[in-house]
Image 1 (cartoon, rainbow, N blue to C red):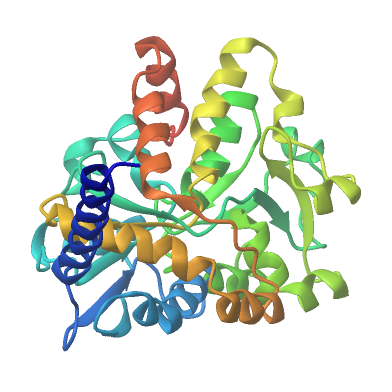
Image 2 (cartoon, helix red, strand yellow):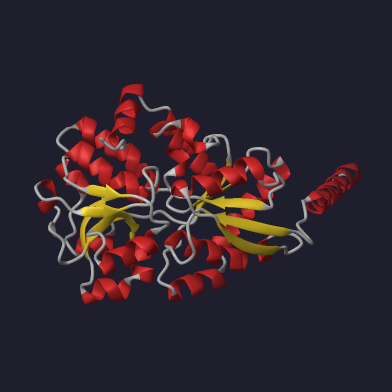
Length: 345
């Protein structure tokens, strides 16, 4: 190789090293900052459990190793917490929302004005895992099988009509003809489960399988609750092995199946996290990378294993792409899905 060519290669290599070094130096630092993860439910529930696991490890994956804390802000199906991060909190990446899985599709499935913010415009960091929603009842409930709920009424607990524990039993009523009656106003699944145990209500639709096995395994093992249906197209291997039926088995035509598919697509982003739309691009890039690194952290995974928590993260970019596809669904199907989650008064 000629001397000039060798010299050019050396200069190019030096330039690349310098560029990489400058890029690293230019990466935004969170040193001295406090990052707040705002959870849209009360302490002790599944969303809170995942958020606190995330909080314990996020700092080590951000430049400057900031302090990370959790703030619970329950209410309105996590809309209060989500709207706070989207509209009120600082827009510098130091506030992260951990809302219910129902929030990302809010503008499609409910009155957008009620949300107080636009879920389609925020920047998703990703989701901690995908999950399967289930319906469960007390063993002494009037209806104790999925077949029963089409002729016998169970009273189910919910947070709000916009929360998964609210709209999921309503969907089964409106689309498939179930006879559930829903009582709203509980802060989260922990309080709903306690209400079941106290005899206030018969059951709940919208509990995640991951929360069930991590927080209520003893209750399930003892027979204190009975899982009667999986609100999912394919189901979870564990529950399939227990012969727990799929709600899809009752769909009578393609239209009903497409409506259920849109509504249940929220299970893909079962534990979503986002920052405000105005978050600077460089900080968003760093936060998205840190999000994935955190959920793949060996220490986090070891702790999650001890807690029986499933961890299978999906990136913010993939979540945004999925939402774009869902938002582009045919208007008539979206209208039917919107109507399906509305409580018939």
